[in-house]
Length: 201
View (cartoon, rainbow, N blue to C red):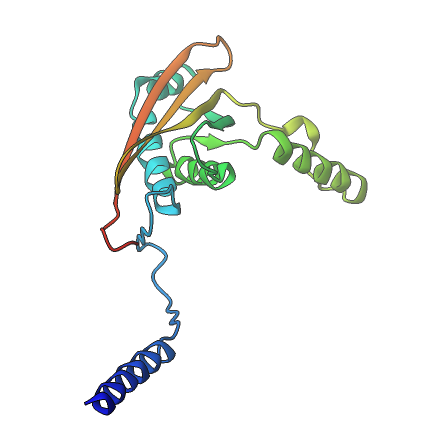
């Protein structure tokens, strides 16, 4: 009887060891447009969707119609000043800003002009061209911005036992650079639920 118990324990142990040894890591390519949410953290899909929705809303307000009617049909130029990350986690501001830029340019309703370090880099390159090429763009042709976009990303976390709800709130505003009038104010909220079962993650 004792021998049978030992044999059974040995058999189970061998099966467990074999099962653990057979586990492997598999990596597969997926479409970049596919959302893969492993946690409730902010991800690249959130950045893309929020930027597209908010820019679409911004361009639907009357400020753009008013500008074009008083400027001979010209498209307005927009510069992004700063989007502050006030959330509880690290969010790549550069990725979100790039998504905002793409949404503005893709719309075809407004121009985007570089700002900050980007503008400095462009100026340095242009200055170098002026020294080395006769047909280089002149410094005086630099386009000034008509409107400035800025805002913030906030987050709120509510947690009870193994359930956590994270809400992200993105606030953006558009300011007329000539008279400092706020011509648009937009807000977008994302709510994510993460549940932890009793057996662990």
